[in-house]
Length: 551
Image (cartoon, rainbow, N blue to C red; front, side, top):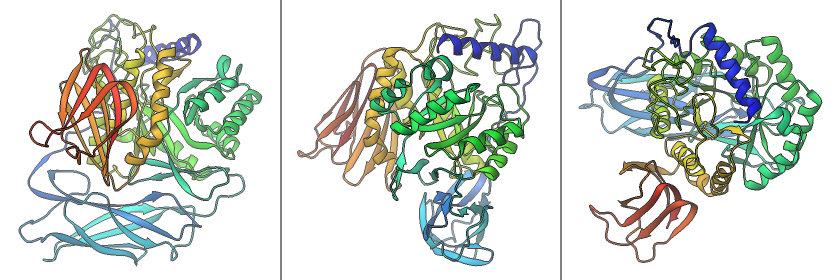
């Protein structure tokens, strides 16, 4: 974190918490412990099986030009009470469901879907739907052979062709969480993995536009300029250069997102930008206890003014009104900063940190890198319970600063790469670290990840890919298998080297090869028959990270 941004962030943080709370908690020595509230309820367990029947469009939004689409159907049998679950008699239900999907009484798609299917696609024609700015209400019905019936609801967008004041369209692929964009002059939609820093605007981007050229050359795909943008001429020059070199824009309204007049002015000013990827509204609104409906009010306004780009926000708290704040976003980000901080005693406020008191800079954290995985897993669990897994993407905000406030130092480059790989392994489909300027070793390891992403995204953004994971000896591993290839992403959270065995599809073949796509301190040796010991050995340096494609 650069000095200017450090002091700006600290001034705002101190001002806010001094006036009220942080994550709903008191934090000063002269304050009493008060239950913060806002905790996400623990889902109840049912004594009988339940069907979590869900449906969603494969893409958001569809456009007038789109002639065909697909609905995603999920049919998990579970004992956890989630949104929309209903009891099912599995002894009479057979092996599949007959699913019908309709809009305004008109059936668009039908098909047989197996039980416990995830991401089963039912194609349909978009021709019967006239484009409109409001979403269509969709009714999904599933029936078992013995007559049990289940219902689910969703919405579908088929928007008119973008008007002349809309410079681009960015879609969300709800099968994978990927962003879909069109390159300049192309008619084809392609995936983009957003990787790029929150970036100091005044005094950094404004004084050296070549920074943007360097970021593009390194392989970064997005820049998130941090307001305020008092000099609109300078802002225009920065955004022009970003568009020129091919960097996507994440436009930030953190200080003004509750001022609807200001939001209207800014959206109307920026929405014609051809490289606009998404909007950003609440910056830790849970920390500052913004009104619970604030993010949703602004979300609705942005979609009225634009509607062709997703809306994002970041949450800082581990468990404070998650459902309410995330209602106002298509992309939910988490920013647990666990490196070089004291998780139990606040060095800023000289008070202890507990689940109901204190502010240590990383809410309810243990103070190690595993906090990032835990936070992403919690977000995924909550979205599943809410029935929102298909409706929202989750991104990570790795720590790329330190030496001020709660954090005694920045992460090392190797620690940063652990943060990045860990985020991908636990479901993040975008990575936006805080903040650039950042230490040189972080910039270098972030560059290595950026240069591996074209290969990585071919696996993680393909809905036909099967995913599995494991955590052993402090090493976190993600495995994505597509056809005859497997992507292996591994990161060692520990300060000692570690080795573990993997059982990889095709790894026992004498013709199998492993191509390294990310080298942050790890190697993979193939060989041996698959069994208890596996058919490959993964060797990881202390705080090492590595990626391979095995085929």
